[in-house]
Image (tube, rainbow, N blue to C red; front, top):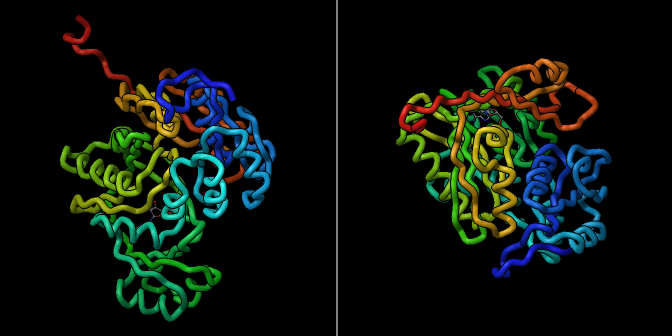
Length: 371
Ligand code: AMP
């Protein structure tokens, strides 16, 4: 593995190889950002022809294949991951061979809603009121404590609304519990939120941390539809979101990215819904509207480079192209200020994220700036 010289031994210089666990679009865009800075990327994922393996070297093997993981570790200089639903044990084994950033304990916390919510509450950050639920009796007790409406979620392996049941006035608790298939779960009080926000913080090897702008997220069928950047909000509320993200990243000792999803309640309170220690769909707008995008920021953080400026040079609206939306790709190519990103997926299944388009809302220079 040959890389550029660096006087600082903690720096993994351009020319080195970044290992990425997971082969989806987040891995693809990380590999593309890494390539721009002169790094190579090596993907580890179980599926042939995944979006990331089209732009990087790939090991195709199961996440539980420890021999393949060890061989992969020998071929890379640092490892990161692009989604959470990988066995934390595999990441722990990997960390015995090579630096894994963020570390496996961060992944473990983010994978489990019980650990995640306990973590935020332990640093005095508000969440929806919640209780762990391990069986039907526990569910009945939790619903009695928190009232209806509420949301029952599997503690692990849920995303985009999967593994969730809303408990309304008439929902049968027996049926709701049956949907969990016996898996440990969490009951959350339903938050009557005004809107959903998110913030991404990057934290470097030296502990320096910077936030991207807070954004507003709109969902369709539980899947992110649009991100509006920046979210229109009061300076106090923005500072509060930044404080939450910075405190979480610092307490976790995170090196890399942390996306924090928030509910803004009708009385202006911010409650954490969940976190993701990786690039996040609500940060895709940064590819086209910021000096440094989230993927490059991840590469900088895990390689020990100085973090880049997160300054936004344009406002932006990012729209996901889900399922058949992809058929409009030609239309977006013809739109001024539209930046089209396609993920190389050939089959457009319903609910599948096929690409996204970011509409830039450019700001005119003021007279002062022009002169
Ligand atoms: P999650 O998988 O936890 O991110 O939940 C997916 C979506 O379900 C969120 O983006 C919200 O729109 C909604 N949701 C989740 N939890 C709650 C809650 N406690 N109250 C209200 N809506 C929720």
